Amino acid sequence: MPNLLRHSKLTTQLDLLCPAPVVRALVSGFCLALILGIPLAPAYAQDPVTVAEVKRTAIVEVIRTSGTLVSLRNAQVSVRTAGLIESTAAEAGDMVTDGQSLLRLDAELIQSEVAVAEAEQQQAEALATDAQQQFEELATLEQQQSVATSEVRRARAELAAAKANATAAAANAERSRVILSQHQLKSPFAGIIGERYVTAGEWVNPGDIAYQLVDPKQVYADFYLPQASARFIKKDLPVQLLLNKDRSYKGRVAELVPVANQPSRTFRVRVKPNDALLQDTIIGAAVEGEFRFELAEQGLVVPRDALVRYPDGRTAVWIAQQNDDNQWGVSQQQVTIGRTFDGLVEIVDGLSADARVVVRGNESLQQDQQVELVEASSNGDR
Image (cartoon, rainbow, N blue to C red; front, top):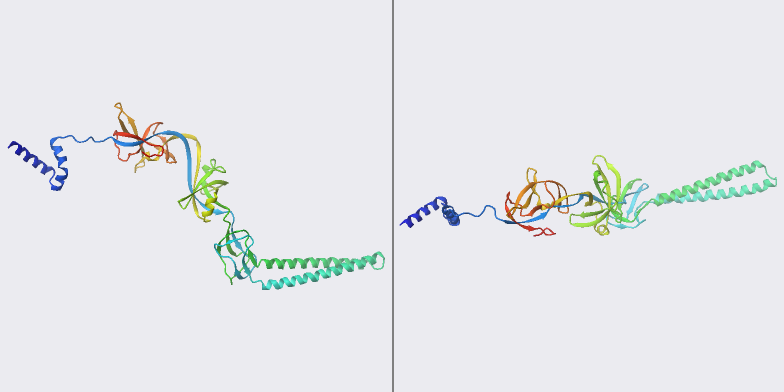
């Protein structure tokens, strides 16, 4: 009877603590432990955590910025004379050679002008030849005192005028031929047609742009860096280039323009990419650049995974320390961070060298919690 009474009281207590049948079935063991005074598990178990040492190393400055792929020869090819376009000979995307014809203007009128100018040149040259002969004849008679000196002077003047007329006629004929040649627009260098702006039947005037022509073999990446970094950027400095966020290429600094942009306080750096990028490039495309250089100073660094950031702006790390019982526990330490590079973060204040910081398993640690250490491997894996 006492056992039945004790069992009845126990059942009543279970009903009060765990009224729902399903819940009672799931947590009856826990409720029974509470009633019978069975001790629960410790608040914090010795969870395994991965740690890494705080190291002192040379600090690497890394500048990541966006740039643009440009060609050193990117020309807006324009016509040099007025006229009606007779035909075009190149389209956007075409590869053209140096001197290749791009378009022709109607040249019927200028061809007639060239013919007239060349005829006038021949006439002037003939008159100059005749004047030369007359002068030479009179000069011979003058030596024999058979002609007046005034006649010789007149012949000399007529010869000079005839030669001048011949020179002017020759220049006019050459001018007409030059204008005729300008009725054909030729490529100033080998490259790719980026755009055609005109079509057959249009009237164009001198200076009107007909084509965009780009040289794909002289491609560079232009970046604008903070002027404070000018003392670190040197010619031939290696640069990592990233195109479309998934294709990586190598390059080197080819040119620094030592003129700062006043509003942005930046200066231009021109990077020469390797040949692999030239095969994949699109002129004018955006490109990411990573400039790396070691500073003279050294500092303490920890893996980036060691940082715990809080919404209020605080940054902390968990430090693993061994107590008198040779047990490992953790404590949180607020830190001030600096530069970030190669998966590492510079610690400006808050840590000392050779301390162990938790890099994995630090998501739910508690102050003074006992842990089991796992040293991080060189690649950061457990």
